[in-house]
Amino acid sequence: MKKMLIICSLVLVLMIVNIGNSKTIDSSYEVGTWPEFCKAAITYTFDDGCANQFAIALPMFDEFGFKMTLFTVTDWVRENWPNLKDASYNGYEVASHTISHPSLNSINKEKQEIELKLSQTAIDANIPKCK
Image (cartoon, rainbow, N blue to C red; front, side, top):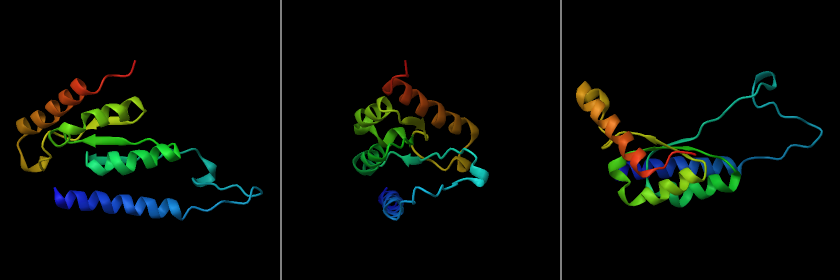
């Protein structure tokens, strides 16, 4: 768990540094962020449900008007269901990332299905569907 917290913190620091390096472009120029100015989508995803996602990442994403998907390990977020519910109401996607975060290739198919299905069941029970 400590290793995961360190990894999540490192990713967040890298994101903050990258945002701090953004530059403004003179209005006479146009920046093509995708080849030939094609439209593109960027998806931000966070895994596991680390506490700093709620304290640091969500407010930062709100500030810049970005949304993310929170892939949630349901056994790890028991006290954070209210935060996940608030995030969902605010347009963030809450998605399944298993119950206990096993290495799926190390468990049999039956256990994989249990991990995935029960995780989604917990999310469905705690996060209301969009109307």
